[in-house]
Image (cartoon, rainbow, N blue to C red; front, side, top):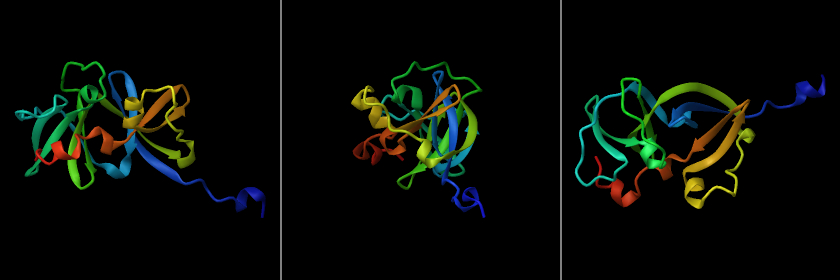
Length: 157
């Protein structure tokens, strides 16, 4: 038996990659419930500016977070090409408005590197790390940080 045969395969993490304002982000596929086309949201009064409103998802009311607005990126015009990534975070179902889903990737867990210290604390707060993939740079989102603070979440459906 060779040494290569004895090595254990590296643990893999599956990620859903998507674009927001010409930048690539990803989330762990285990948090993703579904990916659906754009559906106009019903506006909620007094919601944070990055919460677009709510949609009806098979009888459940789901808040929609405009990820570009939340990450302080230029907000593109909404079109039929936009996608809502439905995720479950801390027991709550939330939709993330993104420009497009690009890939489902399997990457070695140890290939995800910490966010560089030159990024602002606020930028690092939204990211769990970064992953270089050829000429692409994927940013792994911290979904818990992207959602409204817990006290604001309690007021959302």
